Image (cartoon, rainbow, N blue to C red; front, side):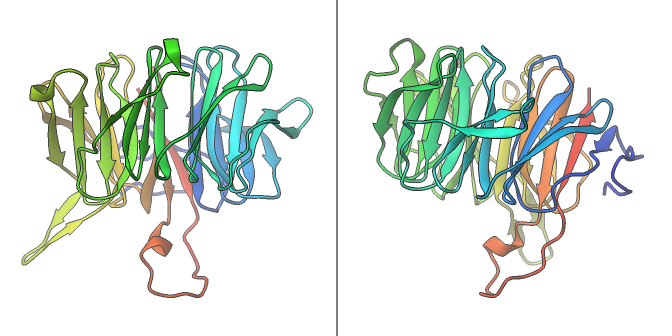
Length: 324
């Protein structure tokens, strides 16, 4: 298990625990670019924090009156955005130390997921609204209402994949206004996360029952699913939700993070586990990765399954960095 005070490197592996991380539930982590060390973390306490993981230093922190539920950085313009529990989309202006609300994004419920391609940021809401924002003008280019709640989404150069409680919707970025392809979920129980495979010829999705499904476009014969994040006991097996997925941009290994506090790396070509990382404290709720590092956000998510109605004391959140 990873231990030690924030800022220490875990002896078991090159985990660096970031200093001065929000104690509340972490809703998003996002590396600013493929080669750099800047990282943005959003939290349900309404804060968005900018870090340099290489220096283990917080570079800035902005606060909002409502909980922040997601974060994304537009690769084309390097602008950063967060979504709120009130359905707002806000640009993070670090220089003026403020969040600027975008006009035109009208969601009845909170922002559940965000992603980006080119100059555009894609925003999904629990009310099923999907919006495409042009970050060069900070204007909404396209809005569509999907069936079911949007749970997760991911963007690539050619495709946008959006996972809802009613299925998976696939858009072409070259014609984002066109009707999407709808596909049935490859998993029986509620899904938690969806990510495009690196060549965008398919996608992976995870669920609360410790499973990951791998789907390919136009080739049903290649699809498969596997079990993970499970603990075998003498007379039973404990199953943990797989909350987070991300791909290494260079090796194409798939990382999975679960409520068991574990992160595994998988080779989808050989269909075998490639690596098991040291266990961290509390549940792994978010993952992100670039060529230099894997970022692991861990929060206490026991409130999701607690039978107690009253507020319960939660463990503080942590962010770990695995340096490649």
